[in-house]
Amino acid sequence: MLRHLPNALSLARLLAAPVLVGLALTHHERAFAVLLIAALASDVLDGWLARRLQLQSAFGAMLDSIGDVTTLLAAAVGIAIFHTDVWHEHQLGIGLVIGGWLVECALALVRYGRLSSFHTYASKAAGYALGFFVAALFAVGFVAWLFYAAVVLSLVSTMEELCCCGNCRSGGRMCTACGGFCATRRLQIGDLDVRLGCCLS
Image (tube, rainbow, N blue to C red; front, top):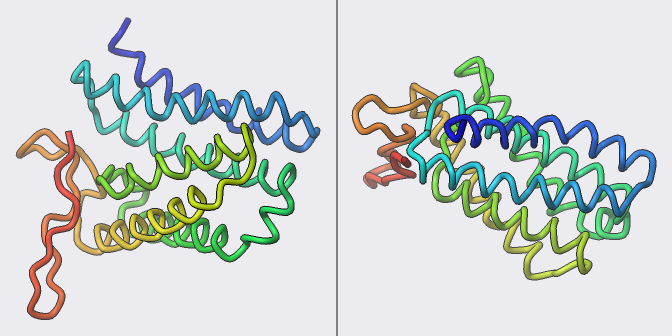
């Protein structure tokens, strides 16, 4: 039963997204905040369990990525409805994060026919920063340094994933050589040979 737990958590997060949107549209802020924070916590927990129990899989990584997408969109709807001041005052930063993510998703769909699942360190850091910011926003209010940290890390992650999309043939599938998730090994920029990401187990 434990071997299904990481994917079950990812699936629960995926299914929670339309419920979150419904709660936002009907202005149930407390219920929205509680469910959103639980969904964000499950994002940390499912990955930790998969690594701890050695249950990583291409399907699990894809399910996790889709869950992240739906949670991010639901969180954006909630911010627009419940924190309109934050949405309007910081629309440039929010737009850059969402816009960069949409561009990467579009490129991945064109190149691989599906969302990418690179799971690089930058994407993990950006995911945690966004999660902490959103959780803090609904729990205690707007925290400026968390917001700016989340924006910067998200943009770094987006640039890295765009490079990965341009150089990695698998799109983040399990690497048969090392058993990790295949991200871009090298990127040639002029005379520089730069290593981006790594194989993450």
